Image (cartoon, rainbow over all chains, first blue to last red):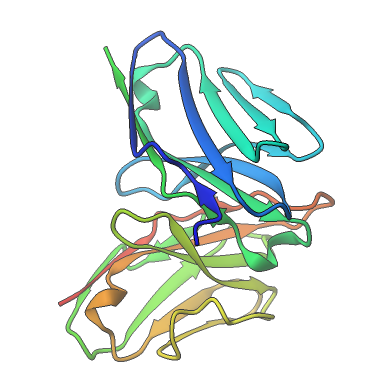
Length: 114
Length: 116
């Protein structure tokens, strides 16, 4: 049973426009959420995170929104740039630290078109 | 080092052979994690070390998998009698536990294992 779901395997966005990547989760114990970006043949790179006590966190072109009641989060990238083309993974964790590891979605392949 | 390093970067082995994967975490990071990513799948959590101790090994896929960490630094993941379904990218991550509920994990480049 997938606890973190990214229902769009791929997303194509024009350069300069906004990219919106979505993630849903089922485990109500999750209270910390992260987005990772992965290029081919490289490990995932941490992008941005949000604690469940917040509903928004912004870092430059990247903003993560959390809707706890809907168990939904999204990553907004604006404006989208060619270097943003990568696979984006949503991950979640519950309080108690990292002992249970992070639970990842299957990823969304973002393609930025010139 | 500057980041998490893993070796080998690629490993091709024959079914039934043993393999050993190595992870060097970021210096000073006390927490270390192993994950596996099979083709088309997300990352699957395998095991966590705090220092040299792994409190819960239930995430390991089978008893053919074992992991150890020595000196609070380098970790090895060993797969005995490899099977074709063990083919995957094995990723290691490390973190420094802080005051928050969860610390950010930093990943290595992974070891691509192919079992023929």
